[in-house]
Length: 400
View 1 (cartoon, rainbow, N blue to C red):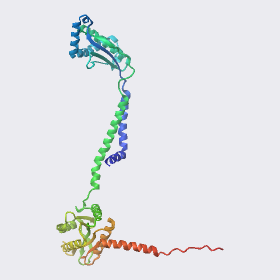
View 2 (view 1 turned 90 degrees about the vertical axis):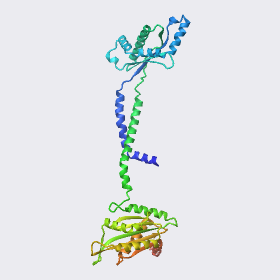
View 3 (view 1 turned 180 degrees about the vertical axis):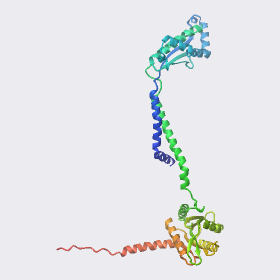
View 4 (view 1 turned 90 degrees about the horizontal axis):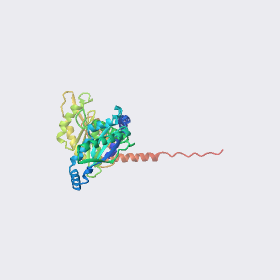
């Protein structure tokens, strides 16, 4: 599931990845196109005792044993081939122009576990690279012949012209540039998603009403839906109540809404002793508050809200010409065929019935039986109306 979400995020911002790939491929292509090809030519020699020792077998074996044990001798020969002195002598021997010298390199090394010395020349021109390897080989051989009386270099492989460049690998470089662009694009997409996700999360999961600090309407509806799902179990029931608090004029009996913050503070102060941890109190707007009380039947909920109603109505106001008018509508649900909309419709109906009461002391209650009976009655009426419709008379065509 998470993999599908990641792929969806990448698909939604595919153009960012495409731009990132192009942004790396174009510079990589320009760089690779301007890079010169590098060709390599290699000559190899065997480091061995001089031929003059061959007549004396004992001395020859001793010299060969010394050469095998002393790695420093082989390393010294490689360093001589790689020295600036030998390079300069080789260039003077070839009499190359400054332009031909550009990019020429030489490297001397001994093959691991052997007495073979390799002299490797590299350059943009395969012919000059071959000539440079031969010149360095000759100068190295001459220098060593005057340095040691015991050892000498014997040619093994001569330098040859190679038409296959050893570097750069332009295909590989372009591929790496594309992969780098892909990684860069994916990183940018996820970075943008990371910075945008917190705001969306807060917006989507905000459960607090900004005006009162109570739960908001969307969270309340979510919890009602959860309780409806649990109510499919015969042992589970819940009660839902709407409470509307208004000011009532003592003379005209007109109602006016109490400011939400003030009414919520008064309501919470009065009902908090009776609220359990699992009970929900939410603000639905327009001085209307909602209670959700899991595992509470209609009888208990009505008794509780009648006491709550009495306490709220007895609250004194700052204005001597006004009183508190509290109306409460309740729905008790213990199973049946109902939806969130149907539950909210019936509790709103109960609240309207309580508000219409002239004394403002009524707590209206509907139960699951009332809801089911109303649904059955509506279904029966619909069927009766359908059956009572007169059948259209058939028309017969009269022959003339």
